[in-house]
Image (cartoon, rainbow, N blue to C red; front, side):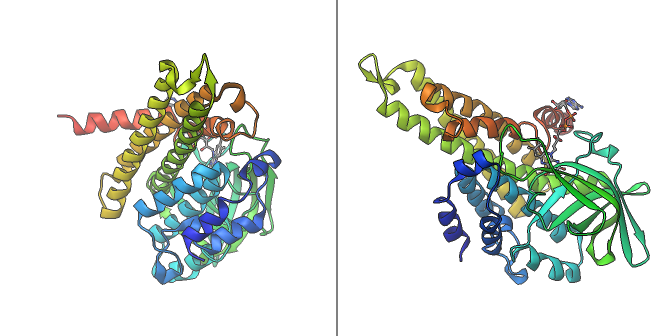
Length: 363
Ligand code: FAD
């Protein structure tokens, strides 16, 4: 099945019911994985759709319109695939990437109880011991971990960084569901511990690399994916708000005719278009191999998450009581959008990086 056909099928699925249940049927995710939707930039030579970043972004936004939880799983899987593509040799790429488009599901673990925004304090160790890699430590809030067959685990090996793929079925791995989250409730978040877990050395994705470089490279993909997902949130909110404002009459006219309501619609359109342009710019830079893509991805994520949080709040305001039931599109968007300001570099961390960028590029 093509990626577009798989997404069209997804659009018929009950994302609101998944959100309420806190669970996506795993077969739905495996089917999306087999169609290549979850990591659509994996090249054809490794069995993937080989989409450009721009086209994958468009796909991510389409998924994001319908279901923030599936989009979250998609971001994790794409980030894992990108990290493998970026940091391994051809033998490893040829062994691992086809698995990531065969229905195998993967989560990504950076965060730890004491390492949130500051990932330089990661304490999980990923050490080589002969033909094996030994993993000790724990990760928190790993998106998709409740569904995952594999986890891409970031850790340290002495003073250097490392990343390894760990099967969730490996001895010593414990996956515990995270508390029910505010938003993206069906994204399968879990906390994971690794107790002297041993995996074959050929699952090492990166060893003896600078940790900051390793993490930043993975997060650049993640930020761009989250930003495109926010475009989806904004599109869903704009459509719901416009339709409601056209249909709902108060004071003898459709509420769209009241200027303060129209302002909400204008702001929603502006937020969506601004986020879309920032995403397109960053993705074009990714596709062209621009060295500016790191900063452009931060900019896109910051702009899009901010716009999504504001836009979702505006959409709830326009629908008012009609938007308040917990499973409406705008209520889900409102809850999901708040999380977008926290993950993959919080709003404050993005602002800090953008300030550093401004200082660096200004004479
Ligand atoms: P903290 O780092 O404790 O920050 C708390 C507050 O302080 C924030 O507002 C932050 O912006 C601010 N702050 C911190 N440092 C600074 C600073 N220097 N300057 C200004 N402000 C600062 N992690 C994974 O590894 N994999 C996943 O798949 C994953 N998925 C997630 C999904 C969800 C729904 C959530 C909620 C989290 C997920 N995370 C995941 C973890 C996420 O990456 C972290 O929550 C995030 O990095 C922030 O860390 P923290 O929550 O510990 O907040």
